[in-house]
Length: 466
Ligand SMILES: C[S@@+](CC[C@H](N)C(=O)[O-])C[C@H]1O[C@@H](n2cnc3c(N)ncnc32)[C@H](O)[C@@H]1O
Figure (tube, helix red, strand yellow):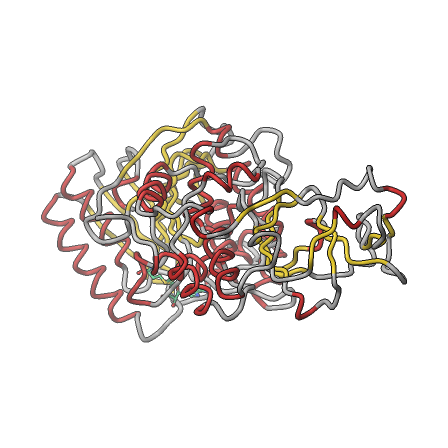
């Protein structure tokens, strides 16, 4: 993180908010002392609330002072044992008469991560400063941005969650309107960087500069997350990271090594769908051709008609009375050739929106929850079956985990720029063998899992060759 800073002024006013034992400041000081890059003095402000860690922070700062003295750099520091959110929100809002917020040339931060409820003291403080966000880390970053001088630099490590999703929309808008993104670093494996703390979430490191003009290109880099791991980097047009037309301002991170490791993992697989004894077909019901037989709600003589809108948390939720799609189809001589026998099926969406997290979205249909002899499967979905019959449950759940994994998603993204996944694409895909799929299926008890959990399971069974 310390290595990401660009040239700094002769006198650096440095902020480390949520400083812990001071590891980040210490790393930056180490580099400044080694590089002899023209910095003559550093004024560090460290905010740390935890009294138990403060003695260590003092110790680290004294060590920084000794190191700087040897390198001919003047180092001064203040340790603020106050709540950064409350203190700085008050100053930014102008609540504290006569106390202006401090200004910084550089900030290096690993802020605390915690959800903050709508009515929490943190949320109220932030709101006074004009910041609306649901996680503490985003509150820290939004405040730090306000303390930076024009051209001031921020290097932070945070969860990746702010890059998409509706909850972080206003944070993203604020961030991208005031900070120019210069670099994003991602870790290939969730968890590796923080294994000791058993944190299982995706983290990113970013380098941004206070200013209003996003660069034409930025650097995307990645590494395994293990200490000393190789860092792969590439330049990517900014417009590929934040699409100019995207009102949500999602931050897409196309990291090459993700794709490469997905490719390597897939190369280790050799089983075709046909050799699993399975087939994938497109849902046979084309609704406008069978218009006369389609019913909005189930009634006497109908069977369920499933659309992608019935996918919910990995399973089928049916009926959906207020959906924009119908729920039922008559079971009669005209429609019967287009209906399938009920059974356990794995369904996938044929089309996903660009903003959807994954290209391939798979969902399990289990008749245990829906008693009907036949089913209508609409044409916007594909379904996996065994000679027109349902699948054995463990096999279907194993396929569910595999197809919803990041490995498969990355694999699809490598060769397909569009958001459509056809039955042919699924037929061409290589799969784990039946035993592996069944073992994965047996292990996955709950289908509605966070992505990281699902990936952890799949990666346990599918390894990239070393
Ligand atoms: C994720 S840790 C990072 C520690 C250190 N920067 C590092 O990277 O090793 C976040 C730190 O922020 C501190 N912290 C949490 N809430 C805070 C607040 N409201 N104001 C100041 N510090 C806070 C915690 O005590 C913790 O030491």
